[in-house]
Image (cartoon, rainbow, N blue to C red; front, side, top):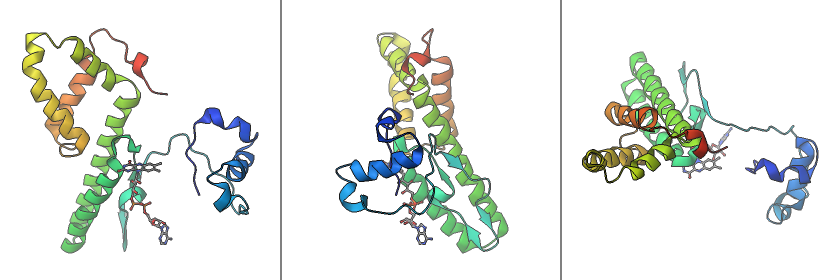
Length: 192
Ligand SMILES: Cc1cc2nc3c(=O)[nH]c(=O)nc-3n(C[C@H](O)[C@H](O)[C@H](O)COP(=O)(O)OP(=O)(O)OC[C@H]3O[C@@H](n4cnc5c(N)ncnc54)[C@H](O)[C@@H]3O)c2cc1C
């Protein structure tokens, strides 16, 4: 059983991660009825960042798909999308059966995960919101008015998944978050 919780709430449950976990299960009104009397058999693992991209996704007689291949912070609901997309790509590789098809599968999924990792990074480091803010500030600028529908279309397509691996859309996003911030400091909108 895993629990996602803000770190500021943890001290009231105890000093160690084991105490905190056990007490949380005993004291939380929702968890206590189902797990309050449970005996913990394993140590408690604590993650502050559970994102990962596996180094290898295929081998003799096995392949990883979904969260086992890589887990990206689900802030943009990329988890199910990548999982389903990878499942179709893996099915194609299995149907083909060649070593090259499995290598292509691994390359494609790794690329997809790394792009989402990058996009999620812009969300947390404040660049994404700062670029929206700057776009809003400059909304009366003629150039911005002309560019806005184009930019808007590509950003929407990235976050919906339709263009999350489109080289052009991703380059446009990078341009915005790296060079479109004017003199604004993105750290002001960073999420910690
Ligand atoms: C807190 C949280 C919020 C999230 N929010 C979103 C969201 O809003 N939108 C989104 O798209 N994604 C979200 N995700 C991510 C999303 O849930 C995952 O990316 C997605 O479920 C991955 O699917 P999967 O099939 O790879 O793995 P899972 O959904 O984890 O499925 C793996 C299954 O394998 C089973 N299993 C494990 N070991 C064995 C075994 N030895 N034998 C048999 N079965 C086994 C497990 O019980 C499980 O049912 C969220 C994740 C978390 C943790």
